[in-house]
Length: 295
Length: 324
Image (cartoon, rainbow over all chains, first blue to last red; front, side):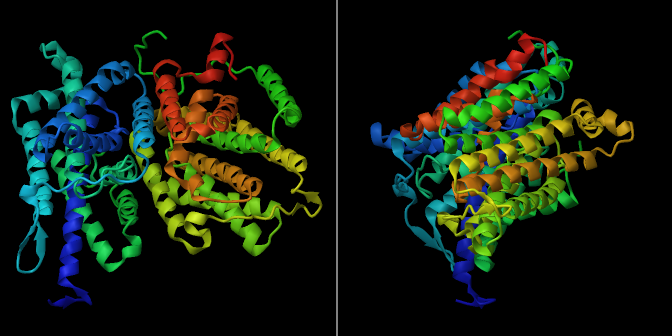
C-alpha cells in the first residue's frame, strides 16, 4: 500500500469508486431530465420520486412475487414508464401552451403526493435489498478490491447511457425526436404523431429514473425519501452541464460524481456542497453550462 | 376553464387597477386582523402573519418579475438563525435583532441573486433550489446553528426598551405592525416606476432591454428586496416561536410558500395573505394526520395547476373584473 498525500491508495480508490457510482446515477437521472426537457420543455420535479418508486418496485417484485433482481431490472422501468405515460396523458398534456413553470409546479405536487404516500406506509427508515447472488463477492484488481456489484453498476449504466445517446443521435426514431423538439408543428404536418412521441418520451425518461432506482436498491437502502434530496443535486448537475447535449449530460454526471468522491477523501466537510459550489463557479464563468447552447 | 390558445404567462395579465377597491380591501383586512385575536389563538395568528409576509415577499418576485424562486426558504431560515443568535447570544434588543437579521438575509440575497439571475425560467428555479440546499447544509454543519437541535429558548425581551414582548397580545400587535409595514412596502414597490419596469421585464424582457433598461440590475434589486422582506418575516418568526430550526431552511419550506401563493393567487396583492392563512390553518387542523398532510398539499398543488390557476383571490378579482 503506497500512501499518497497521507491517504492510502485503498481509501482513495474506494472513494473514487463510490464517486463513479454516484456519477452513474447522476448521469442516468440527468439524462432522463434532459430527454424530457427536450420534448416537453418542462423540468420533471417528480424524477426523484419516480427513481424511488423504481427501487420500491424492485423490492415489491422480490417480496410479493418472488421475482429477483434481473426481472426487476426489466419490469420496474416498464411499470414506472407506464405510470409516467399515464401522468403525461392525464395531466401534463393539459398544460400545453401554458407557461413552462406550471409543469414544474405540477410535477412538484406529484412528487409530494408520491413521497408522502410511501412515507405513510414505510416510514423514513430503509428496507434492505440483497445484492443478486451472481454479483456478490469481489475481484482483486491489484491496486484495490472491487466489489463485483459496484463494477456492474458502473458498466451497465454506462452502456444504458451510450445506448440512449445512440438512439437519439444515430437512429431514424431519434431523428424524428430531434426534429419534433425543433419544430413540432412541421413534424406533425409530415404525418408523425407528435403527441404520442411526447408521451413515449416522458415514459422513457422516467423509465431511466426507475432503472437507476433498481440499480441503487442494493447499494443504498430502499427509502421513501431516497430521491428527495438526491434530485436537487441532479438539478445542480443539469445546470452545470446544460441540457443541450445528451453526451454532455453523461460526461457531466460521471465527472461530478468523481469530483464528489475526491472531495470526500481530501476535504470531507465539503462533500455535500461541492457540486453546488461548482455550479456557482460555472454560472459565473459559463452561464449556459459546460455543454449548453447560449439562449 | 377554456382552452388557452396563446401561451399564458404564469401570472395572467391583471385587470385595470382600481386603487379604491384596493384601499377598501386593505382596510377590511386590517380591521379583520385587529379583531382576530378575539376569535383565534394569537400564536396561530402570529405564525400565519409571518407566513403571509413570507408569501407576499415571494410573490413580489414571481408575480411581478416572473421569476419563480424555489429556494426562498434560505432567506426565511437564515434570518431566523441570525435573529435567534443575535437576541440570545449577543443579547441585543429584539428590534435590532430583527432588523440586522433581515439585512443579513438581504446580503445572502445579493450573492445568490447575482448567480441565479444569470439564467432564466426553469434554470432560475433549479439554481435557487440548489443554492438553498447549499445554505441548508451550511446550517446543518455550522456550529452556531446547533445542527439538529436548532437555537432554542430565544428571549423575546422588550422592544425599544418598554414594549414587553412576552405578553402574547402585545406581541401579536407588534407582529401585525411588522406585517403591515412589509405589506405596504411591497405595495409601494409594485406601484412605483421601478415596479412598472419590473412588470415590463415580466411581460417582455428583450423589449425592456431594447428600451435601454439594464434588466439584470432591476431583477437583482427585486431579488434582494424580496430576500430582505422574507428575512423580516423569518426574523420575526424566530422571536415569536422563540426558536430557529432546520425546518425553515429546508426545501419543503420553499415548496410551501409556492403553494400558499398559488392557492391565494399568483400576482395578486391580497392572494398570498389569504393563501398563507388557508395553508397554515390546514396544517394546524390536520396536524394529527402525519405525512398525509404532505399528500394533501401535493393534491392541492396538482388541483391548482390543472383547474384553478388564478387562485382564490385571482378568481374573485376575475369575477368582478377588478385587480385585488
